[in-house]
Length: 487
Image (cartoon, rainbow, N blue to C red; front, side, top):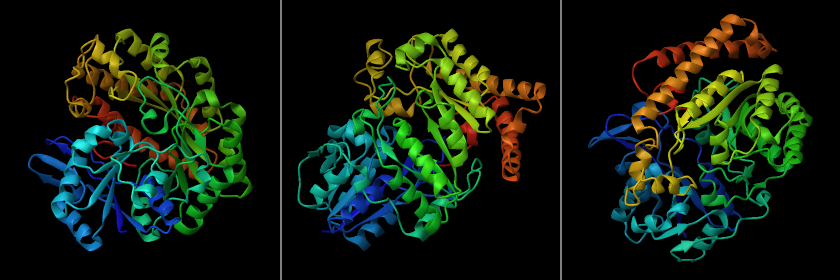
């Protein structure tokens, strides 16, 4: 049984695009390495690219990926019986359709199996697009059954109880270096790698689509298993910085503290950054994170408005979030808050409350994202109810428009508000540092910290200039990276 997996490319219609750099296809590597436990051989191929100069412009679109001819070369060389495709993002549904067409043109007998968040949310749509089978939910055990002959159109296995049973998502070191050595201006100690230590999130935030695969269940790998992977990444792959990619890494406080304790005990000497649910931590946790090598963390605030927070399901006190951000700053961590604007009933005052909280909480940087009402989220029915979206609308077009009108704003007005939020926050930070010139000194505990701060100041100047531009950005990443996206 010859099986290969494709991590898809990403394409955009028209001349405006965000460069999507290929990242390590961890999801497919988990499945491929799990198959090997059952003596089922498979290979993972990335159809994306790492360098923007390699984008393909054709027929009014921009493809951040390899050509159809290059895909056919892979198919010719591998001659697979089954091709598995990862489909994570609804916005890129058309790419999955084109990849399926390319495979079927080459050999219509090849069985095409699609999985991932988008496929799990819309299995019928994927089947209509030409796939033979769809894996809904977790992929490891489901794909073993596919390899052993399961030809059900929709395959949906129960979630695994023990994640330690899944082999590490390692790949050939030479291939891995292509990803880990890509320059990212915000890394402290490259090369860096991502790691997933848990799956899912128990919360039920109205805008989130995690339920598409994980069903609001949270499961964590053991501390020993996690730190073993980190150790190998450092020893065998030369990794010096780790980024936690979990939806909610610290749900289990004892487990998270166990990971940090082992990192210290085994003297990993690795820097790391992570998103953080502030209601799951305290000062003791933050102290331990700092001691284990944390230098940057992101707090999911989402809204600074009381009524909006109630609507979206963030029933955690903002005051405690403020305490955690300030304490993290105090012990020398770099802090980021993430915020969302464009909820269906949100007015100008509510959005201003979010901007004001970002300014007053003393975070080092704040991100402002426009809400995209995904059809699998709990917020989507509100947009249908208010006729901001028609049930007959193409869900992909909604995703590609980068937002949706609300009770008080058009899409263009929300994009302008997003730009205004960034500009207002950046002006505030400039004034803050002029009044408190020694505020950044608390970040410096070593020569490495000093050089990192100087690098951030340089990029802060570029970001300030972008915020002064009259151009309205296509995405939040335009403010953070300019044209390029880094993973």
